[in-house]
Length: 141
Image (tube, rainbow, N blue to C red; front, side, top):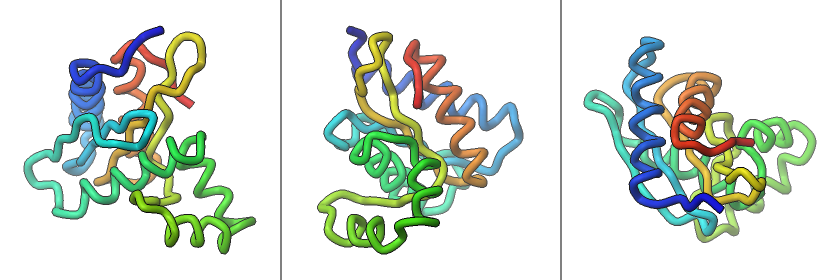
């Protein structure tokens, strides 16, 4: 099993930010959380607004807490908005059901954590997360 080490978390973040820069996105914040939703590593680019950490963390913690990408959670808000709002309210962790976070999985499919981003559109945030996970040698969901 591949471990989500601090070095790997930083590698994911660096690759995500490199992808963002190459694509010409606005300044981003990216956070990697472990399987318990605890922050492993975080970076906020120069020029990124102050709430980028909170938003990225909320997306990543929601993804790992519910076992699916935040895109799936965003889609579920269309059918069960009260349920997800209740989770957000009751959770001791940040919880944002908005596109921009993916699970980090090892080769066997075990969830090791999640990566979330904030600064662009949900699709842009998700794209840099996916690029980071792949560059870190993991798979995403």
